Image 1 (spheres, one colour):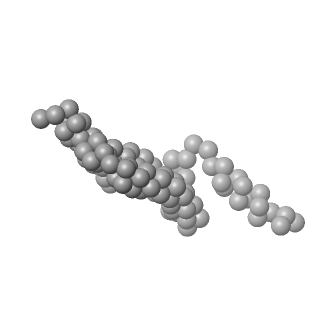
Image 2 (cartoon, rainbow, N blue to C red; image 1 turned 60 degrees about the vertical axis):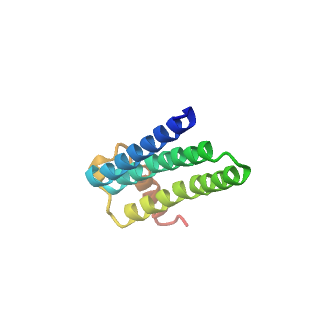
Length: 118
């Protein structure tokens, strides 16, 4: 068993652990915003670990460029998706406001909805 195989195995185990942590967080956390956090952070890191494992196992230019494209697309879309889901949950009142430390969005919406302001 070579060092590369051990590294690949460890990276896959780390990825599995991060994916499991994300799943547990989605089930256990109390509201949409914390569940979104649990879903996005470990999933992106888990995907990165698997992609690095693939590059370590098959270090060719074709694989590297594909992995870079996959990770770039994931890093560009995942934060936007989480933001839009969080915003929709907030506006449809699916957020536990008692868990918010500071609610800046409510203040901004209230200022925008005042009469005389466009």
